Every structure is written in C-alpha cells, then in structure tokens.
Length: 515
Ligand code: ADP
Ligand code: MG
Image 1 (cartoon, rainbow, N blue to C red):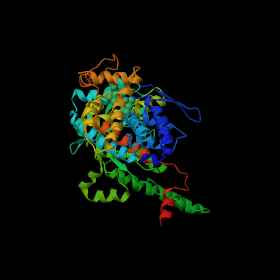
Image 2 (image 1 turned 90 degrees about the vertical axis):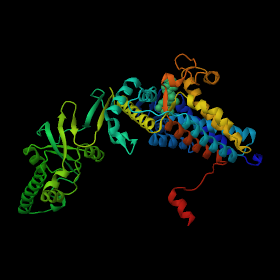
Image 3 (image 1 turned 60 degrees about the vertical axis):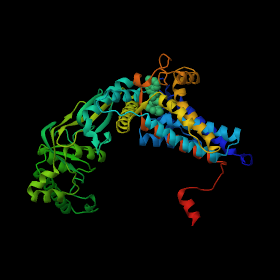
Image 4 (image 1 turned 45 degrees about the vertical axis):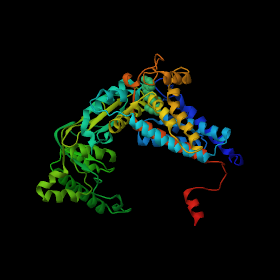
C-alpha cells in the first residue's frame, strides 16, 4: 500500500522541523541553557524563552515556520509551555516519519492514531488534575515551577505571587480568574521590583509647572484632541487681521473647553489624544490641574480603576453639566494621583473602582528587564491557567503517568500503531528536561517508570521522587494545549507527500483562480 507512495517531502520537512526544534529543546526545564541571539546589526540578547528564540530566527524553512506559528499561538492562548509544545511536535514528527518510512504505515493511519491518542491523553491528564486556590501553597509552587528556568526566577516568582494575592479574588469574573484585567506589568531599568496597589503610568505630567500631587483626585479621561483651531483654517496668504482674529478665537475657544472641563469638578485630566493646544495646556497650568497623557490601552485600566468614563466630545461635558448629578458619572475618583519626578512615573492610588495592581519589573539593562518582564507575564499566565483549570505533576511526570493508560487504548488496525507517536511525545518531556540537566535522559525516564514514588526524577539528585511532594506543578491547560498544538503540526507535516514549487499563493490570487 504505502510502497506506491514516495513521500519524498516527508524526509526534508521532518528534518527542517527537527532543526528548528533543536534550537530550543536545550532550553527546556530549570537547567535548560540560554541562547545568545545576534541580529544583523550585531545587537546581542540572551534568552531562554522558546517563543523569543523562535521568532528571532531569520531564514527558516516554510514547513518549519509552522513550528514558530504553533509556539506563538501557545504563547497567546496560555502564555507558557511553548518549548514543551515544540519538543512534543518534533518528537511526533520523528516517530511518525519512522512509522511511515520504515514500517510502511500509511500517513492517514498515523494521523488518526495521533488524533485518538492525544484526545485520550488529555482526558487522562484531566483525571490527574488537582484544584488549587489563590491562597494555597500550590499557587506558589506552580508559579515557582513556571519561572524556574528563568533568569532570577525565584525572586520573580515572589513578585508575581505577591501581585496575584494582592488582587486576589477581585480578578475573578464569572467565577474565572482573568488577571489581564487587574494586573499591569511594566518594566523599568531605573526602579526596583515592586508590587504597587494601584496604577503606575510610565509618564510625566504634561507640564512641569502642574501640581505634583493631587489628593482627592477627581479624574476625567479625555479621548478627543484638546485643540480649538484646525491648522487648515490658516490659509496661505491670510491677512494679518484674519490671523489675529483666528488667534483671538483660538484663545476664547480654548478657554471655553477648559471651562467646560473644570466645570465638571475635575482636577485631574488624563489625555488619550495626540493633540493638546499650547493655550489649553497653559490654561490647565493656570487652573492648577494635573494632566497626564495616557495610551489607549491604559484608558481601560484607568477607567476600570477610577470609574472615569472616557469622553469623546466636548459636548458630552456640557450635556452632562445640564443634567446636574449625572455629570459626576463622567468623573472617576482616586485618593491620590502623584508624579514621582525622579523615576518619571505617575501613581494613581486608591481608586473608586475595581482593584488593579501594577507589577514593576526591574532589570539593569533594557534586555534583562525585557526578559524578566516576559517571564513575569508567563508566571501570571501560568497561575491563571492553574487557578482556572487545575494543576498536574510537573517535570514531565504527569505525562509519564498517563502513558500506560494511553497504551491500553484499543484502536482498530494500524491506527493502533499511531498511538506510538503520542506515547513517544509524552515521554519526550521528562527525557529532555533531564538531558538538559546533564543526565542520560532515556535512562532516567526508565528509572522513573520503574520507581514506585510517583514517576518523577529529582533534578538535583537524579533520584526518583514524587513531584507532587516536591511541589513541582504545571497547569493542566499548558499540557493539554501543548499536546494539541503538537498534534496539529505533526499531522500537517505527516500528510504532505510532496513539496511543489507553485505560482503566487497569496490568499488573493488563490481565491481569484477559484472563480
Ligand atoms: P516551556 O517553554 O515549555 O514552559 P520551560 O523551560 O519553562 O519550558 O520548562 C517547563 C518544564 O520544566 C515543565 O515541564 C516543568 O514541569 C519543568 N520543571 C520546572 N521546574 C522543574 C524542576 N525543579 N524539576 C523538574 N522539572 C521542572
Ligand atoms: Mg515555561
């Protein structure tokens, strides 16, 4: 059957995937090594982060690019486990290729075996899952495990845990934790690590002469340009009188806008637009208003934290004024808004709305702060996944646990052989983590399987241990998503029997040719 098909693409595609996977596999786990990334301008960056490394690769085989895409998606959907997904994908492809080429199993059978095996493995992993709560030790363990391979991981995990517990159940929406909404993560090279109960904006006030601190801040968020005169009004060749009139108009219109802003009772203005007329700025200074620019993303946080509603048109201000009480609804409130001049940040503290916490991640250089910042976000994501869907034993131990049961699955005919692929992938995680720690990975996996203590190997001593007792925990979701992602890419690669050079395949031209 399979003898009649050549699969001349499989070999080269599989090799390309393996080559890309090899660039990140040695980073897996707490003893994983770092990569030195060098760009065309000879900038250097040291990273241990799967996605960062993959995205930095320049020339890349089109099929291997799928690996990068999978890693990116894993990063977006769970924010951790990217290297795990890549290692498993490479293993599935390697094993799948062996079945096709050496044993002559048709790829369709292999693919069906992978499908059933992964589905089953996910169900079995779910059965191994334990629930954790925000104040449980399990939360600390899962964050520490997630950050164990990162630069300065222990210190970072303390920071992350403190941020998580400071927001606590305020980050729960409809029963599920969503920390994106309640934890802001910023990176600073000139400040220490800190968790601030409140919002920290990486901003300076609009004008140095504005007050440095407002107590009892009544906050308005402005989305429109604060600018009365459009440039286009100033026609070329305008007469002196006309210009003078327009200038007068500009001042009176500016005054009108500022009056309207101030009449709402606001003493703090957060400006989310690009243009602020100098006259308006001066008037705000004269009225002792604190004004600071914010970005569109920051609007959401500030609005949630202070209850301020962003306004888009000056008219909204006056109509709100007429309605008397309702004008207060535009305003948000915080006990304090202040600028930290030295560090060039603005603090908003004790807002009237939902709780928000800012995690300040430090670093001596831009690169280290960036790498630590990414890691901190990974930690938060891992915690979120763990709180929402539970945890399994880490270090590749949960995967090893389910292997026997996956093997017991009875599929029809050659699909059964496809299960081998999933079994290999499940084994590959512990093997790689231990190989990276300097052991003979395969030998250690055998030792773990033969041990009664719960299928794990202590990374420091090389002795069998129970990962639950050691507190090495991974979110279930990281594992199941990684398995599914790996299955998806390996199925595509195994199905391709030929790579053909084609004309333009951009979506536009392909749909044109269908017409
Ligand atoms: P990924 O990009 O897949 O998240 P990591 O480099 O973060 O890759 O490694 C994650 C793996 O390392 C997980 O399987 C986790 O259980 C494992 N791990 C973390 N700490 C330990 C430890 N102390 N002993 C064994 N395995 C660990
Ligand atoms: Mg990780």
